[in-house]
Length: 399
Image (cartoon, rainbow, N blue to C red; front, side, top):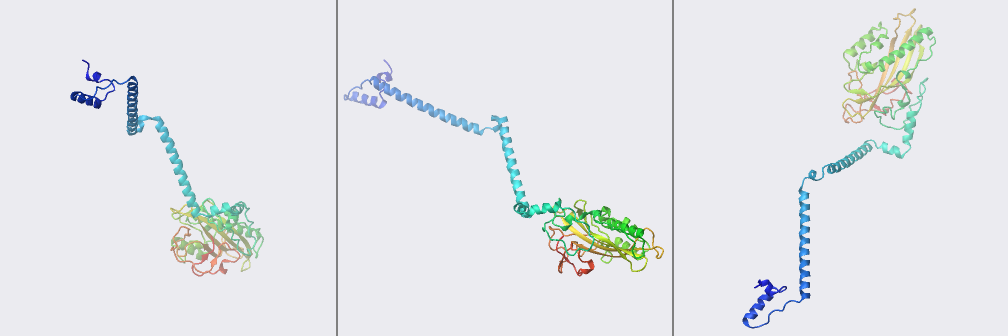
């Protein structure tokens, strides 16, 4: 006897067979009929479709599981060099983006601090500044100017352009700005002695205001040797000023000096403008060599902002006496200093240590006494120093 599945026939469900058995035992109903060939084909097709559907579901779940496992694996395990190449590109893009961001921030900061850089691009001022930089130096002064130089663009100096925005931009560099006039006999003093006195006047001005060692605070031996040692009072005054600088004895009265621990010059150029001439002396057999020169020094502060440049302007008026040795007792090869005055712009009013102390743009506002009085243009050489008000701590209109 075959098994129960063969007996009941293909295509008969368990529910139908159970109903047939109950009806047979109770004498009711009829035996189930054998399914037709068409019914068996339909049943088989439905069964295959069910199996295929189940297989697809198993395959989809398998792929999903494999993707989940792959996602959990370390990246290096999968791709090695390709992953490294991808990471290299990503790092490169990150570096480019970071560089671009830093550059953009730097540009914004620069424009915030120096808005004229952006404005210059939008106006004709940049071209005007270019013309000023390329302009030829001014001819030497032969007479006193009739007025102050034009204001021009009030630009702040920079390390690359320390005389930017200053009339000194067109002044001569260093000793070239001290031109010696043609010598002639004056006041009973022979032409050759006048010529020698003029040359020594230039030597003194260079040694006192342009010698790098003297500017750094060194003792101006070359300048001192030019002065007549018989002038004991002047010698005593100068020795006291170097030994113990004070308001009454200040080396700055004759020599320009800065403290290297505080300041550093910007470049090696000092701008100079002025004139020298000769007049008869107060007594027969004497001539006076007169000099009136302005010196412009750019500095940055040691340990400070390297982009913050400040200029100090020193103007000096000197009178040197040259005498006929046949009439007056003089030391050959020297000159006598009869008078000297100085006008110092942009330096602390309350410090008398023998050094200049310029004010910088980045300095706090509460440094030293507040300047007072009407602003004075330190580039205005149309009046002598003693014609200017000298009370208190003056105010410079520009530097």
